[in-house]
Image: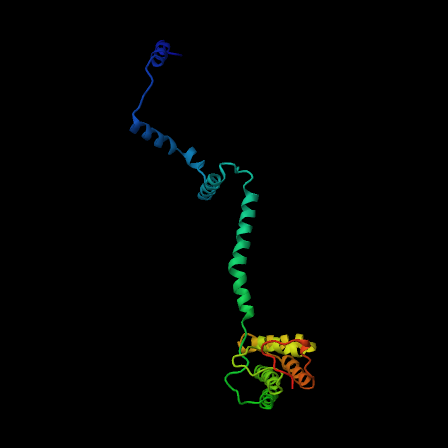
Length: 228
């Protein structure tokens, strides 16, 4: 049963002036309201907050023309471009520098002749020390060319330089010279393991060049000696 005074109470409440809290009271009411469970469950995760902050930053750069719904594809494309730029500017030059690095052919032994290097290589091969056999056999290739005046004796010459110079003198063997230099570099730096096949390839190169007359392919370049 509804009390007789209920209508009058409603009219009295409706006739009360609206509540006008001060700033502190309003903040307290807002904090109490937002602390309720239904608001806490609706609060976005830290990942969502970070994403929203990132979107806001992109919008600040693009005049608020970027929408949240279609930001995924442009963002992935932008990240791909950044990765490519980093690879071109930072990674590629380092890789190229590493590829261009080449070991010196000789370790300060100007008086050792080609036959002595060949003897060392043969001795190393007989005990299956393929690392030493490859290094000494390649040195025999270069020293033999110096003794034949195909190339000038040059202190500090690298395997790549020797292969390039000899490749101009023996055009038919240029690819084998490059491969021999690659094997020498790998073994000399200690990062590659030589095999009997590696030594056999350098030995065959040494034997073949010894029987080959340099043609110089009509070229004259630094490091090439005048044919005699």
